[in-house]
Length: 265
Image (cartoon, rainbow, N blue to C red; front, side, top):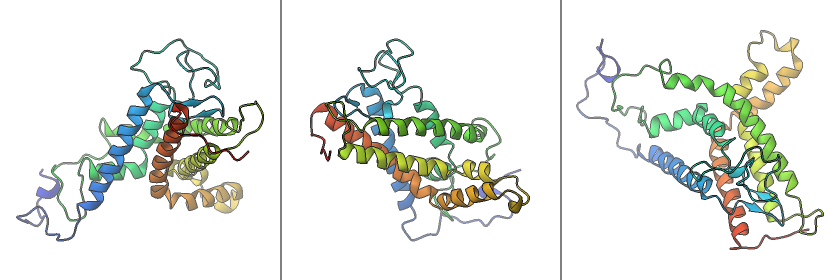
């Protein structure tokens, strides 16, 4: 049976859409935003330098945890478990695939790239180029159901990033120190936690499958907190892309000597 826009009973409209507003602008901006992050993050992940500031212990999140012998001295907060890596493997290989999986399977990002990249559909009342849709019941989209498991790993990575941010309170003489880099690292970690905990899977873990909230007051409280964050899940998804790039860019500029860290203590 013909489905989609050609299904029996659907109105036959001779043009793709009848909209006169700039309906194409939101998907265009989404594509540009996602492409900017993907290009920047890919380039930096494989650059292999300017990711660690030894004087202040700044480590970019794109290279954390750094666990190979390819990592510069001091940047391996959790030891060096494996030998030298070839250039085609990024030093943050342990976390990056799971973080990518977490973002790709995120409910908001699915909406974003389904509509903008796959054009399914581009906008309300705008026909999509394909006439069939099987949902997320077949390969490869059935893999979207792994989102909850990616969430667990993303939580562990957020803990690692938190440790990195704490270790960064360091001065060249070995004592306590604080600079602009610490502020940027902390803001990034706070935003990453907010995005991670606002995840729909986290909300379901906190309060899902409960018949009576009154019988589970602690889980109900957690559910209400996560629900408040969940309302901002879209905004947090974009904010964290920005804070990740800003944090990495700042660490890169300081590590390369292009700028000096603004020190407060």
